[in-house]
Image (cartoon, rainbow, N blue to C red):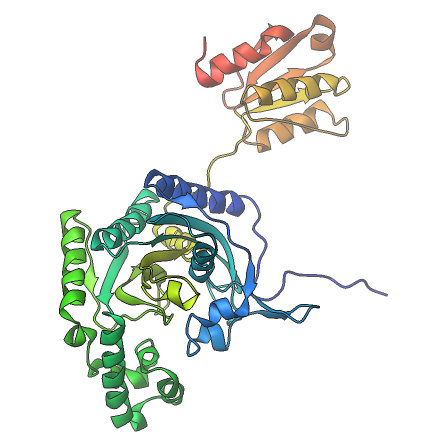
Length: 421
């Protein structure tokens, strides 16, 4: 009987080197930039009480169609997190840290959606949240961090789309105006948008279907419904971005895909990615989410950036290549392996990336492995070197070599690789 061949589940994939190395390098760079800006890491659970995510909006596809829901043996209903803002806000409500609370996160999320290029059912994001201030300067700081991150990884074809959804009352008035407009033109909308209209008129603006374009183009825009305070906040954000020379485009129908956003709403789009699915990140304000999860009135703003989509954009722009190999020295030992064990340990403890072969392979086999490892140097111990307590240090690029006493291997390697005396 043939054993089954197991594969990664649909919508997932294995990250193998060098892709995994590049993936981690991107997250590491984001962590450095976020922490340099005063953000500290939060690691929420991968699953939460399902009710935490119902606050995203029961008219959103994330809630109605895409959540992975689990019923535990005890009868609890849990959901694999489809995003992390709600989890971070739940952690804020539970632990009540001092405000303003600046948190960054990285990790996997889960949505049952149709897999496509750069979109998986298990996907990774990096992001930040700022809780406890409604200062528009906080909006500018969050926007600037995202923009500078894209700059740092070498992306030059990213655009920032900006809008304001106003205060809760502004959004409610706008929603009703949209409802009236779309209901008046319901027969012209696609069947899918007609269904969306019954749940949430704002979501109709997300449609990329050609048959909806004309009705959406003539729909009211949010700017017509902003209160004086919301308009002033929006203008302050614009002024802050202008002061930093960060380019942006006002996108009056940008609403994003989750229902908790108020006031500042934004999206980062890659012009290097083809088609309508060109977003590489986005976010906005969610000044009512903390209350919805049982906390006191607390304003918040943040973003999430899609790691897979970002790396696709990097591929399209041929930037942010995978880091080079971490192995700097390969130890070749054909006389028993003890010398290799001792030398690799000594090199690693000194901060040098060191690798070795196993299984008593031949000199030729080990040298081939050394060349494939990406190491700059090989430390070779053959029978003569073992007898004389020496080692051969060979430059794997130029093939130049020298013989040194065994005790001089480490200082010589450090001198060659690091320039240390």
